[in-house]
Length: 428
Image (tube, rainbow, N blue to C red; front, side):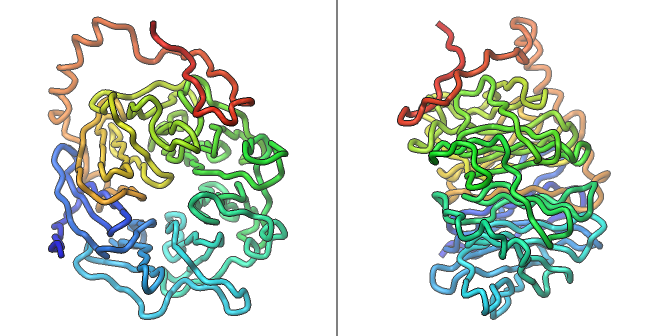
């Protein structure tokens, strides 16, 4: 058995939480984010699909949704950065007996709003939402969603029937979004008592009715607190934006090699900027053309640009899953993602350049990031980025700006049976 290593974490450190199919790992760096130390594995041999860091109310608490093949799913917590874990003898998150259901996996752990220190949410398989009002000591099933009349007709996606994304609205306390595969986006405006499907305009390639009320296999939704009425969505085929709180969605798949994918992350400071990693198709779930490219929009989806500096552009048949991408709140922002091949990549300049942080991990299914303590203690030293800027100056002088509008991709209406959407344009 590999010995577990622990980290000494201090205020101002950047902490990466990495969940894999064989355990959880922690990585720490200072604000320069140039060198990383690794702690773990924690829960060796167990799949860890959900991780979270809760700093509200003075806490420094890690949460992990770890699943044993023999004992099933457990919700564990640590207040000392993994040195010790509180794992209850009986499952903290479990369905009431009258439902006849049992939790197969914990897919998401989401702390509530900053001023709701005791509120936590958890998304599980089979698709259901649980809520805690006492900091995770006790949990209750959100019955308004569980008893929704659509529920009997939800169908499992490739990963199962899972509630994998939870988005508390920062402006309206009673509003919450969830994403279910394959159920779609649901929203409550009354604190969970009632829920409405919010999928108007989102396509379903694998159903006869391409635009049903529900049944979409949504892979991820994100929201920026500066523009809470706007959301972005990565679908099982399709990229979308909503400007009306999810009431309707418009296609923004302009200039991407494929509109299929899983991961999606919001820039921490700019509500116009979103990151994705396209995947070739639902039948061949690897990066298109064997190129590992992160795509970024800085105009809310009007155009997308590939970010490739430092990433392999040959024989890189990688897969990045729905919860395996995150951004940190520093300036410039850090962007991180993990692959099914066990490689953890990071950018400390908003995606302009990339570096392999760690290889040789088990398949990565979850990446989260936090800054420990007061954010002011984690100011990025200007000197740490100076060499990179100097090295890029000649290159910028030789070529035009990278942010060029890419010709829209060919609509995918008739691509069923083809391996992937073709790129919008190719250099001859």
